[in-house]
Image 1 (cartoon, rainbow, N blue to C red):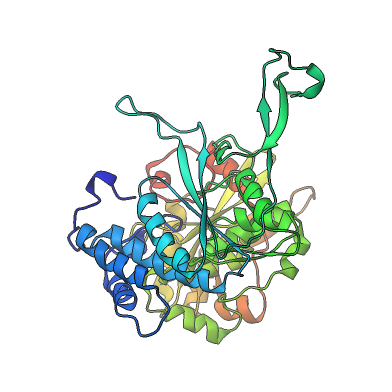
Image 2: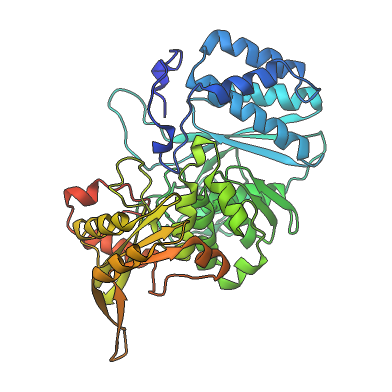
Amino acid sequence: KKNYNQIYDIPTTGHKDKAQAQAFVDTWIWDTRAEEGFNEITRPKDAKFTTQVIALISGLKHVLGKSSSLAYLVSMTLRITEIHRILKPTGSFYLHCDPTASHYLKLVLDAIFLPQGGEFQNELVWSYKSGGASPKRFARKHDIIFFYTKSKKWKFNPQKEKSYMMYKYGFKKSNFQVDEETGLQYSMVYARDVLEIPAVGSDTAERLGYPTQKPEALLEKIIAASSDEGDVVLDAYCGCGTTVAVAEKLKRNWIGIDITYQSISLILSRLENEIGNGIISNINLHGIPRDMESVKALINKKDDRLRKEFEKWAVLTYTNNRAIINDTKGADKGIDGIAYFATGENATAKIVFQVKSGNVSRGDIAKLNSDRIREDAELAVLITFKHPTAPMKTEAVATGIYEYQIKGVNATRNYQRVQIVTISEIVEENRRMELMLSFEVAKKAINTAPKTQDQSALNLDIDED
């Protein structure tokens, strides 16, 4: 997200809380972590890094200074080195980037792969037409994908694409097929290194609202080219899970990694929607709390990037991954998540969530009820690590009752306006939200609700169309 024209500047150290960064936006800063990574590479304690990598990163410090750009390259160098280590000798590696940093990343890849017997195979150009254009330059309509192999022997399944031809100059019509959509004639030829695949637009059915989401067609071509059924596909920055979803559909084994539970939650929901409910039972989840001790470990994480992960995990787990996380720390107005439920054929109601890992008191209930009223929500839920006190329970009862009309049945059910749920109930008793929640209901609510000042202040990670 750094202005390319400022790439050589050395930014001053700011005091902005890094936890304010949106869950799905890569932000980089030169900090203690970047300094440690730089020293790990340039002052190695073992033979993990090639001499070319050490020289490259040392030299880039003179070019870029202690900047966010160098912090990014240090992070990528550490991780690509590890990915190269575990890659099969016949394995392939693809790295996607935009032109802002592609030239630096190719140097990093050359320094890692080539001295160890690997080869550069392609600079793939992913070309698309969506997005805006500037009257001051050519429209920026492509990203770069570098394709490397670990050795001189690798797996590759040639891909075919349509080549449209005019019926002219002696060509026989029988040599070509006819595109049913365009009526044009075409033949199938080996795919070029320019992949003309539409980006995930606002009107695309597969869109999840994730800012860097890739189209499934792009991943299908890459995975089909460099793997067979039963092979393992690893995406170390799996985001909203396009690689994972495509690998599953193409009958590959897969591993996805991401730093935020919000990402993992989104992928689980995506797989349920696209593959079916049974898929979840076949997935091994690591790093996600399974007992109270692991919950404590998550709460006590010192990494500032993970400070909100406990809140995300609690809200999303309790709502079966159907809530929307409010990801702006400090500006959340006491709301950590929002969910919607249907109250009629074209009507929805809102639930707000707040998560507490420390001490709680009666005042927290009163404040949450005030936040509920301000947000025009019917219900509010306090998820707390520590057990509620008797005055808290009394205050919750005093907030009143919401009468919910059960859809399709001439019956109602009463819910306290403010409810208290403990982490131990979620983990040890598997307690979950009873009301039917869904992203689809949430989308409709966002689109039909008036754009009030309070609503626009919330940072909702949801498809806006």
